[in-house]
Length: 360
Ligand SMILES: NC(=O)c1ccc[n+]([C@@H]2O[C@H](COP(=O)([O-])OP(=O)(O)OC[C@H]3O[C@@H](n4cnc5c(N)ncnc54)[C@H](O)[C@@H]3O)[C@@H](O)[C@H]2O)c1
Image 1 (cartoon, rainbow, N blue to C red):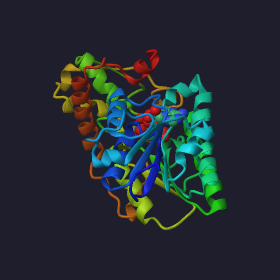
Image 2: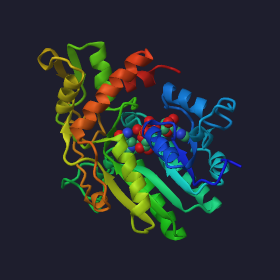
Image 3: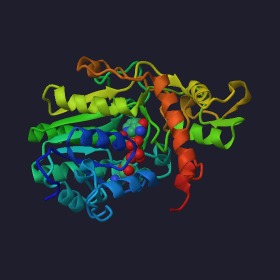
């Protein structure tokens, strides 16, 4: 017996990650039983500590009688999506699969593309194979707005093509969608691929908002920025991303694979993101020198960065979804929350790339 009671059971790969933190909380709040399947490779220490204290399961701390009702519906399994047997064992007994586990260090794909393939393509294939063996038929997949590459038309709708990704990460997300489409059509499943824009929130420990906050806390007078500052993306609050996923799963018409862009209207440039964060942290804009480290092709932050992502979200809006937060509000809210979290934790102030370079 995986979960007590008779709740709906959701299996969340990458469930200890940033977006998953909000999704898992939302699922628990609506009474769902949740199993997190995560190798904890990039999950933040704070989140892992919260989960191990809260959840049941072999990788949780010993069951406590004081465990909250939500904690009793949460099960934590440390496992790797590259391990099909482990996935199949842990997935048995669930109805809904949410596949968020991924290698998310896009820049690293240039030197180490194998990791994108192994975790993001083989891992997705394993999720589908475990579902097939177990007879499961409902899946939500975290794809990405990067699948559009450098599109000829913006804002870009879901039917745009050809899709020509510009990094191994983006290729792997597109491959994941293709693998899902084939299985879903063949087996009569109901699945979703969500092409997220840049998702922001206080618990993110990677991405431009996190890294700018870290740099400003270290030195409020000088800010190094990747690219030429003109890279423009659709920033979206993690709460709005999760609301979109849950709504679509609930109300979208039945289809083997439904694809939805998830983002806010328009884009925000990196230069503007810096300005917004300086303001949110109550710093004097004029006293912060910006140093742009130069652009990869088209002004991107690194080779493989897509300098312009602008998502047409009318399909999702037609279902009744609208973001609660504008892109600019979401960025400022995330920046303040990230600053407070970092200062509270007392952890070393490291950008995502610096943290990954430290042997654990
Ligand atoms: N954050 C964004 O802006 C954004 C944008 C587009 C798409 N996405 C996608 O959304 C999903 C979640 O993103 P996030 O920002 O929360 O990422 P994250 O890095 O915070 O979370 C990923 C989680 O997957 C786990 N994981 C990594 N490799 C694994 C493996 N081999 N087996 C099991 N677990 C593994 C990590 O430990 C981590 O907890 C990812 O698939 C990502 O590609 C995110």
